[in-house]
Image (cartoon, rainbow, N blue to C red; front, top):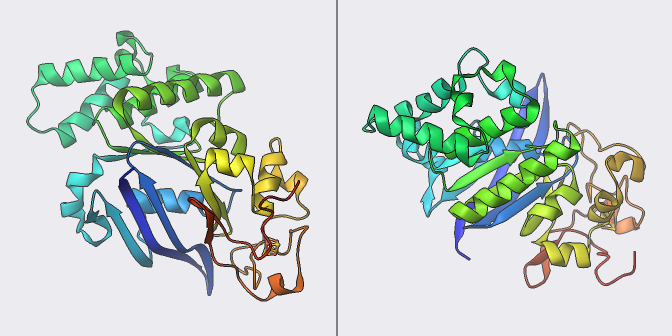
Length: 313
Ligand code: SF4
């Protein structure tokens, strides 16, 4: 599969007073055309920073973003406009990501007015109705305000807003974590249907490895700003190599209940392996040397001095 988007050596720090948070630490990652790449990790691992960098909501301190062979990180805001419509994002909270003062039809039409300047009014109306239908909402929703909708309906509107411009890549940042379990399953199935129908590519971000593995073709596991394991779902689930991945998978909802201690502060990350303060398999070397992300077999990468590969859990 060809690469649709590639991150090369992406680094991002935030300044808080005199201190600096290392949010993302020199990440390389590619998203292949037509795949669902799941990005999983605890809150504070850097997942949302990656989402915001890809959609250019924030600028990395270092590194390149290459989309469809073009280095979009080097483009001016004006030159990037042509690509902005092709990379869409769905946020976690449908209550804050949609303007509550405007009707749904107005919001959808506004996207087309901005990005499809030559489109006739009749064609815009047709696309608005088509987008609502695609996400399982009938035409009457065009006349409704976001406040009158349930969480699941609002997330359907958020997906319609992302879909109406026919993007190649949709970044989904925790799109179901604010929803009830039954609604969550409906939204996941909708995303799968849309992906099949339009050959979409998703970056699906979640703290829940079970949800990510249900949906994704490949999984990247993040911990404290770095990718610690990457591979096809069947390879990761069948042969988890990083102790953190194993803890994430065995945690039903809260990984901190499975691991001792919380994720260390990115203000003061531990030396050596960033996971060593919580790892049950720690050796002396882990406290001093940071492991590289290395390929073990056929696209399965791990960053651990003593991977659990082929070991019983
Ligand atoms: Fe655990 Fe050491 Fe591997 Fe880090 S390098 S995950 S501390 S075994």
